Length: 273
Image (cartoon, rainbow, N blue to C red; front, top):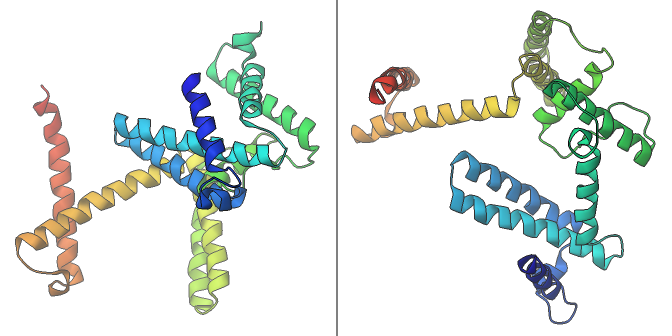
């Protein structure tokens, strides 16, 4: 596509050793990586907001990150953008034999298992790694990485068969954290360790419940944000400030915001009838 070629030429000019942009020339893989992650989150935000104009722009920003990283690799003689495209094309064909070959799957579960099996074969051929946990990306959000690690372990039978057992383990970890807070209030490192253990079990519980923990926490964040803004509105309506209210009074506002939220949800069906 001509417009893609134009974008590649723009990147080439930005990285020109003598005539390029000073900032772009200073960048390397490590310095660009945080921007790539940030752009991916902005893509997700545009989707969440159903902002199609924003999504178009953010996808362009994300594509530019790919081109930027590929250009750095090309300058180092390792690969270029065409190699990136060829690699993903080959991978998609290889991982979809039910589309591009004669293999068929009856259910989405069979397809998912075949996909994971193919990925594991690729990892074994490429890296010759020995652990089933190898290859789970360290840079992904910790909650999602915990779920992926546990999914890998579960494939070889290292998993609780019942959700109730996970809840028992969660209660055990919460009790250990409480005990640590009493016994070693000043040992922040140990407290963090126990808290991490508890969060890891939370991720396992989400996996057993077939819930994406990041999505669930995002919903909780949104709920908290909406209710807290309601409290701010109540206080603004009374022309006061937070420091003029006790915690109990603020809690009453919180309960009021929850009740208004529930009332609105009950009224929604009649609004669309």
